[in-house]
Image 1 (spheres, one colour):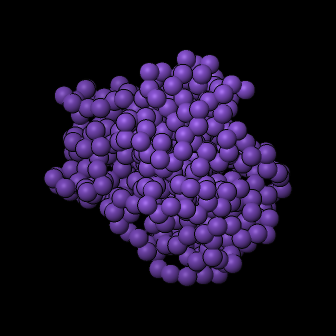
Image 2 (cartoon, rainbow, N blue to C red):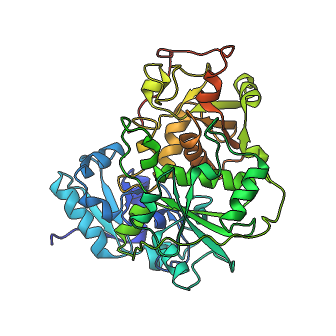
Amino acid sequence: MKYFNELSTPELIERKKNGAKLIDVRPIDAYNGWSLHNELRGGHIKGAVSLPLKWIKYIDWIEIIRSKNILPEHEIVLYGYTKAESKAVAERLKKSGYHKIWLYSHFIDEWSPNEDLPMENLDKFKNLVPASWVNTLISGGKPQLYNNDKYVVVHAHYRNRDAYLTGHIPGAIDMDTLALEAPETWNRRSPKELKEALEKHGITADTTVILYGKFMFPDNASEFPGSAAGDIGAIRNAFIMLYAGVKDIRVLNGGFQSWIDEGFQITFTDEPKKPVTEFGTNIPIHPELAIDTPEAKQVIASPNAELVCVRSWEEYIGEVSGYNYIEPKGRIPGAVFADCGSDAYHMENYRNVDQTTREYNEIAEIWSKNGITPDKHLAFYCGTGWRGSEAWFNAWLMGWPKVSVYDGGWFEWSNDPTNPFETGIPDTVETNYN
């Protein structure tokens, strides 16, 4: 292994002041805020970007580096939990033409314990949990930031129980997204229907619910592409449960892929649901999280709000509708573009290469270029609610104070011929989400 110079804490502070790029090679969950090695302060050194050691196995690793604006001419400082982790990434960088590399090995013993040294974390990181957290819970242990005596692990899918039966987390029950949203409108179901569905699945307002799904490479040519997008479906269910009033929602970061990557056990048992008799509170507890068409029109008209379009570029400019059951093409006038990725069943621009949620600072920076900022009321929408829910979830995790989902989205808006629409390329729009 080649030798790389190491920095002391004062030297790191000085290099940061002089513009060195700081890279955190720990798991993204540690970057977000989880103390995976019992460090005194969770999170990352302020200004660092996330580049987990795990990612060096991916063929497009160098494209990831470049997308974070880390170039060979930059000075780079790497830190992780161990020197070996940092060295492994340093070696990979060196092979890719990066030569100005230093290592910092005092994150746990010097940086994390010192309150005077700046750190950051995702505001609601506890709601985005690592696979190890879930494994501790189902194994009978007590994971960090969990103070409950009842939980339900939910494997979410859309009309695809085979996604569940072909392997799932031990003890998890399955939940079809149709339990919580109506196929006639793709909007959240009525309070009465939500109450019945949640009770049927053994969920009360006080139950800790851990949700995840499987990414199974959706194909737009199939009859039901969403059946392969359980990863997005899980976040759609999480949104509706929060709207209903479930107090403690956790989403497994990276979904089933993270569980597999950690090498944890899977099972094929069809777990029975254990119904409860009473949800425990009136639904919805958080009606402000969802808006409908009248409120969406108010958002468009307000200088203090934005209607945020979380669709593909082709959908936004009206080349395609994005769905095999929606004919009209176009966008809602005044909607701000927040590119989801390639199509209605992918969220590449909000996900890392391993399906974990993208570094939150990157999302916030991209959004800000289009005027999507936390001082406004933001209402996210897509075609029918899934992608809008995931973008909303990112803003909610960041602690942005007034965020909601326009539940009807393009499906509901375009079904009313009196509603205006636009096509083509607007005068100004940011499209670089890579």
